Image 1 (cartoon, rainbow, N blue to C red):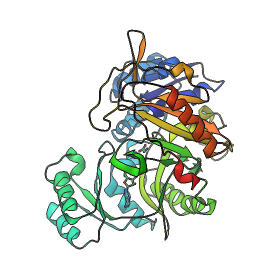
Image 2: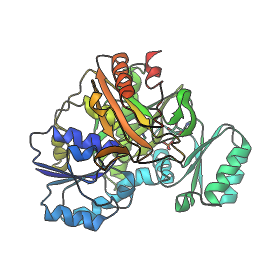
Image 3: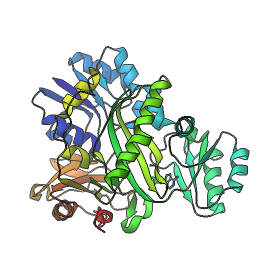
Image 4: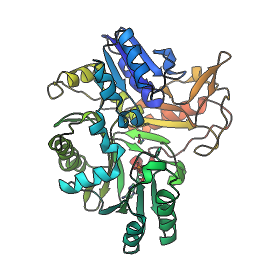
Length: 419
Ligand code: AMP
Ligand code: GLY
């Protein structure tokens, strides 16, 4: 089979790496890809928002399956567009991708179907939002409705911070149209966890749970990033709570989307908080997580291509999906300065000295025959081990073997699982 993966980050490198293991793959393409992906697939210089060009390419090359990685094209309807050309596409259509694209939509859905989530109000008028804010306890969480490159959530510790955030989103429009509406919600406490599931309508096949580290510095300090590291599974969270989250949140949400005439097909990512009152929804994403994928797919023992194909044939409920009993840890190596401004084009050394890990490229390029940095998150170093502890030691040993100027990483990835 010929398969085209759309996207060019660490998540897409991991998807390509997993698909490459399938005996049924004859040819892999990735658009636009990156320097690491280029070692496994043919990279096509098309951007993820070039729906028509991507469709024409897939038709010309007789691609059998297209897999969409990132959220933006999903929200903008890439699946509908490519299906309109008769292509087979893995990912949710636009009317289902709204579960990530609009926080107001998702909060209303959860409320309508009694699915656990933080108490909230949603507003399209600034004055109404201000008035609601005055009555709320602190800390309080302010969210722009639409996609905001992972920056649209502000946790305000004081009334002043909350008011500033509200004004920036709704009046100054720092996130553009995404700020036409806001969600103001209760601050939840507890352990955070992500569960990604393969979903087709009401059929939900959960993957292993994982945990991300969003802040740039150790101890969850500093500004939020796309994710500085992950681990899977989450041995310190009891299986009973994981099951409760699946039964009270993920399955009911998939069923609710069907009832709303928005059946979800693809990877549904549930961001969850294990609160003292049980699991609650923080958010849903309509795609694989980045860098959750970098620890979850390395533990998948079933052929990923077979899961995608079974989904498109309406047979997701029937396929056996097996997981390793190992653990995996991913340490992200970022550019100095990230998530603010950083240099690009710095030579990367030591990739050939890595011993136990798979290195997934997030922001790399080849310049004059040398591998160089080309993004904020540069590499994700993933190791497996019999325990989180072992996987962690291996990932860090390899993270130290890789060198580039300004290299920054957190030293406490997965420590929460070890206390
Ligand atoms: P998001 O950009 O939607 O992934 O949110 C970023 C982060 O904000 C989440 O991973 C949580 O750590 C935090 N967060 C979002 N909503 C809440 C909430 N209601 N209570 C506490 N933390 C939250
Ligand atoms: N790691 C969080 C996300 O993919 O949105």
